[in-house]
Amino acid sequence: MSRRVYVPLGWADLTALANGEDVASRAAFAVTERQPRDERTDDEELEFDALCDALDAADALRAASGDRRLVVAADAGAEDRADAAPSAVSLSDPLRRADVVSVHVEEHPGQGIGEGYDDLLWYDVTEIQDLLRETP
Image (tube, rainbow, N blue to C red; front, side):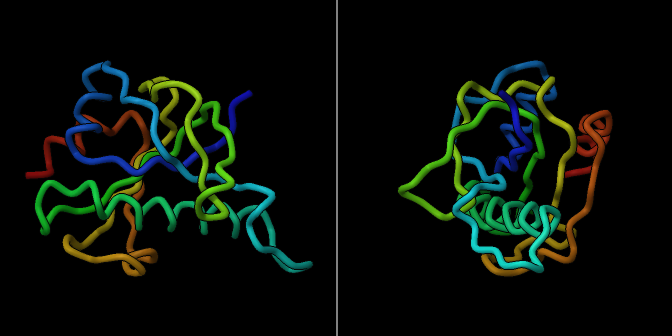
């Protein structure tokens, strides 16, 4: 069964997806039962927390320190990881372009862990080629 997952990627991974190649199964983030919540917490807030966790994880995937971090939102099979952050999951299969719903890219390059959450740019999956053309 698929669920909405947020997958940190490097720019080479996004290029591979754009070219129809699968990206190897990896850690991702999603709404899980292990995420802290109270009576005021809604699913949208939990999804944003998972997206932020994925953006932080994308920090390690930069080819250069000035690269913008990116995360794809996808509908894919995933299993919760009890050994990691509350929103951490593992993809059940390699990520395919057909799984991708949108791409989220930080607006300003070089931001670090714990930063840039409010400055994410959103791209529809149909705009991946345009995004790759405009990114050095």
